[in-house]
Amino acid sequence: MRDLRDNDEFWMRRALDLARQGKGSVEPNPMVGCVVVRDGEEIGAGYHQRFGGPHAEVHALEKLEPEAVHAATVYVTLEPCSHFGKTPPCADLLLKHKPARIVVAMEDPYPEVSGRGITRLRDAGIHVELGVLDSEARLLNAPYIKLLDTKLPWVIAKWAMTLDGMMATHSGDSKWITNEASRAFVHRMRSEVDAILVGSETVLLDDPMLTARISSEEVPRRTPLRVVLDRRFRIPVGCKLAHTASQVGVLVVAGQSSLDANPQKMDQLQRLGCDILGIPPGLHDESIEFTLRSLGAKRLTNLLVEGGAQILGSLFDRQLVDQVDCFIAPKILGSHDARQPVCGKSKDWMNQASPLDRSTWREFDGDIHYRGFVRRS
Image (cartoon, rainbow, N blue to C red; front, side, top):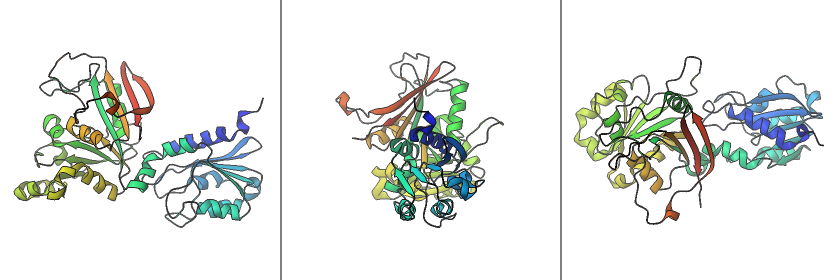
């Protein structure tokens, strides 16, 4: 029976596992892992650890002499770069070591790289195989690919609900639906995204902080920008978001006409440290798209949307959601007027529902966490 360690997919999975360790630290760059294998044994490994830092190939090869690599295979999850960016081209480093073979999961869609790195390596006589676990590599870096293709961030729709599908009582009370374990996981999610978005209704009802509060043993990967979509400019000057804006960024996206009508309030929020972005009058009905485009222009890769129901519904209606994270608590409200988590346009037929695939389920002390990805037609 063939040893699994001789299998290209085995080693590429190892490289993908390494790449995942960069999540939350490398964005807007992609997550990349690299493994060097000779005679069925790993002799070098690394991953892209932080934005602007050395690439995965550098970490994997840094302790190896070129002679040790000549008979080896290098597995890398993304095409080696061939241009000078924040770091020198990885293709040059590989040409210096000249391995017998390079296996690449996927071509880099970045225009300055796409295909050029592979061509350089092949022109130098190195055998390059492309496409091993391509779909897994694309899923890993789906936010990076989306930002390049569409100039929009990856949208994660997150909510918590009772077993009968309610996110709050009729009075708006929602503390707490889920348990501490689920809430701790949400804070870890926050620490890995570029921005968190809520609507003004959520601010008025819950007065949230929207910060990533994790245990002292954990290191936060990112400090997400807190974004409020507030067409009517209803955000209170005394809310927690405004009064912590000097420590953690806050962006208020409001209708320009509402801003013009409240210059004193706008000045107060700006003095507290909030950034204000006006929605042009002609784009009032496209405020969500305007907000996403504005965040994409800032090269924000991942956006976590935490409510409210109208915001989430509008995102689903416009097919702007990429990923769903739903936390289900073993509780029953049993109320006909309790609040639903997603309130978009009514559908007449079940086949109009947004389909999800690649579903995973996880338990947190009795709560259930569901994760799925919206299937595009």
